[in-house]
Image 1 (cartoon, rainbow, N blue to C red):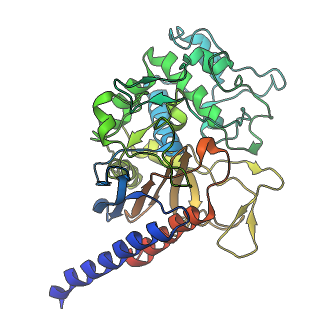
Image 2 (image 1 turned 60 degrees about the horizontal axis):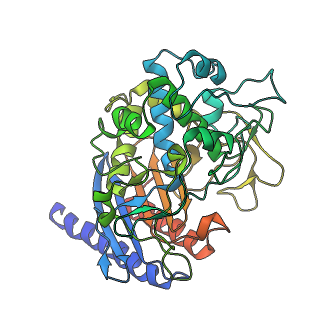
Length: 413
């Protein structure tokens, strides 16, 4: 009886991989490439590349192909921030401006405080920043053009310092970051809030952000194919997937550079992100991994209060029912089921956590179960330019259908 199990497993996996290969080419725009890692019982069950990382040269995607993690970067940044606060005995409910004053400013950040002129009695804290309830600016980052494919590679746009980015000074292509809503009340996704987190950590450690996260998260977990260094080091460029737009053309000048690395600057593989997911899952059951203790894992998974603004409530697993309470913990959406569907208000919090992301030419999804050790990471090398419009429905359907198929074939509950 048992001797037949491997063949059944291989058959299921073959059916799933065949579906991926077929649907990459039938999705609108024909997605060039995908990389997928599946987690089962707290280990990587399999990881595989599909399609091409570079259609012009016919280069295949492999598990070692690098992708931009887009906003999935925020999840790693959040865990790094909570570790940093524990290391320095700082409270996540402390006014971040008091913390910024207490540390010698990092040379790149300069003396800076988060402007909060309209709500001075309502301080912004790390808890609020990581749960998107701080009321900080909500503009999007499109990044900066960098000639990765030039010889030698070099910047096309001027890259701002962190001080210029925070204050909206040239050559930054975004406005100054400030508090624009009453902190601690509404949930409103804020990429700039994570730039504030980046500045905070740079001040606390007086180091560049990439080095901080390398020490706190990446190196301890053995994520050797991951970096927050921006621009990406030259020796990694040949391994990076070429980003494509929905019309099938390359993203002009290659991957964008994100000075706000905490928000969207991680470059990695699904295998490395799966290591991160597994570390959290093991820590949730009491087995510390690297610097991620059980206390930290439970802290970031704890659902935080906040209400979505009118008109922005989420679709749920119940047809026609929308959820208006925040579904976020600290750096993660913690209220989804095995199909990546949100739970309705008043229902028990979902048993899965996730984060998705979208940069010019790249899409990413990372999710895991809070118990049982199951999960999936998916990365694609096609998305719209500069977040100028919504992700095409066909791409969304590809991701959601793939999650559903993995969940069903792996028997997630």
